[in-house]
Amino acid sequence: MKFSRTVLLLALSFAGPGLQPAVSKTGVTSAPCRVGQQAPAIGFWTWAANARVKVFIVNAGFRPEDTSSLLNAINNWNSVSETTGSGVKLEYQGTTDHQLTCDNCLTILRGSVFDKTKRHLTGLNAFSTKHDQIISYASIEVDPVLTNSKAIADALAHELGHNFGLLDCYTCQKKSTVMNQFRSTNVPNDLSAPTSCDIAQVREAYNELRVRVRPSPPDRALMDEGEEPVDDDTPIIVPKPPVK
Image (tube, rainbow, N blue to C red; front, side, top):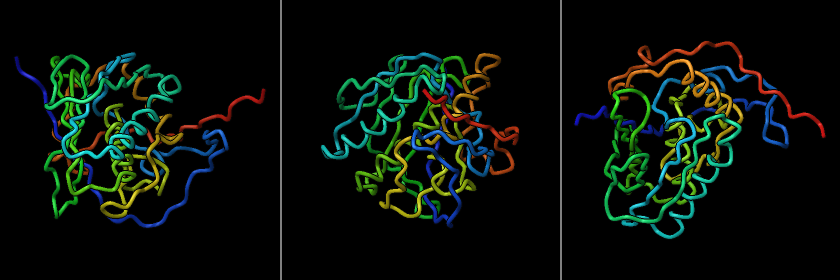
């Protein structure tokens, strides 16, 4: 059986200061989420709508506090499952000693993905039995050089964003999306949960899935800036919740 496969690496590079979108106390913003400015483009891998994804962690290389941070990032994405319209739940199943390839399984493990030139520290390996963007099973590798527990949580939040159709957005304003880059290795960016613009874009990704399913995304290393899928740059307005 053949599988479609891609490896996505999170590049950590220095980012300049930027303005944050106005966020209310509820975490919902009424400011526009412009793609490339506050919001990432869509068109990447996704779990099937309403999937129950079984999450396993390979204990080797992770300290107890690291595992706690990983679970925190997972829970943060679970908390917006209904809001995004994905209906996907990431259900932690415990530890394992190897990567699993069962249906709807996600394995988190240590792996050598660090690149001194591009500063890659984490990577997503996604597999599709139907050769489309719907993930059959996947793994997220965290390089051993990433040791700060909070930074590990932030990195996982970023990688999980790729599991919901989001692409990198290194031009986005600071703290506007988990898909932005880190400032430096082992320095948390304080974004272990999706922002309101991330939520809006995942909603767009799953709305699109109801209409069409894209082919398997190409290997991220083969995509330059000009080849990335381009989204409509019409602002996405996230309304404030009604006053009760």
